[in-house]
Image (cartoon, rainbow, N blue to C red; front, side, top):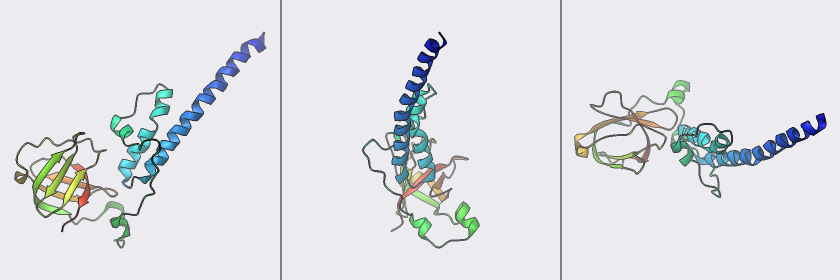
Length: 184
């Protein structure tokens, strides 16, 4: 009698293990496709998004949709990270490597144009020719409605390869950016 009871339990446990393996493989494949993302913060969000299939299998709350969208689709070859220009520069010492430079990338520079993407992220063009794009992982959204040249910005190094854009007059608001085009 006891064997009859244990048999269905063993079959159920074996089938759960069989169901988990393809899901684990799918999660790990997604995480591997995230490997080509150079920005650490965006990579981490992609990594969290790659776990969505396991979260669904375990009936956990879903991952943030912005994180899930960062995972490259199946069939996409993972691109190996290329060292950024920032990491190829000579080291400024332990502290400078850890927190970045204190020299601003832009200080009190007027915008010439700003454009909102579908997801609400913004791309900003500055009077000195620099173009900056907000990271998809940054959930802070600009609500600008005045002409671009009425806004003045400061940009400084953030953590990792990110930059912090602050608009003068917006107290405490920081937009996480990446450089698209440097000064001419």
